[in-house]
Length: 187
Image (cartoon, rainbow, N blue to C red; front, side, top):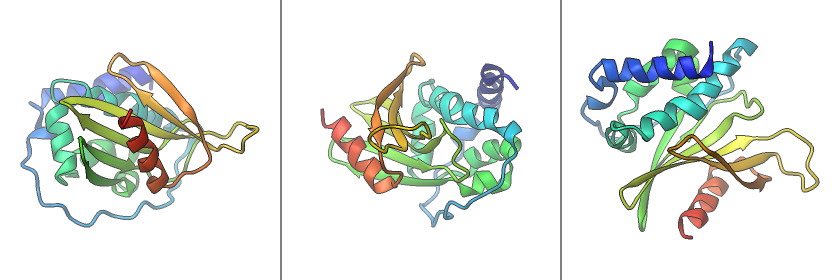
């Protein structure tokens, strides 16, 4: 399926439902499942790419972005998981983890995606709310040989669909990712 077509379909479905993805009252934070290794055939790579690089940022940067962010931040992840489950299956949807982080000056939702980690897909994504504006910062799998031994890339997707490479990294842990996000947001 064409990435833009899939993205438009998912966003349209969300908005056509009157934003029901985002309008279910937030629930108390509960224990999130641990990301697991799952098997996906190669035909799902395009769907995963659309989810990571089109659907999530399109929702975040849309008029429903504040409700989407608030629901994920407060632990109401079930509606989003249901939408992901449709094209990617229950195992993938339940393997995503969400963690709210409150720092001095900003809030973020850390999404960790389940394996497999295919090249150019996100390992972690930070949906950031700072000064009333939203940002989408990612840590992406990078398998090309690099002289510094890097295997990931820190990047940011902007509201105008630009993809900014913020530098090669040699980690995949969420703790190291959050440290780099904090440094970036402190600039």
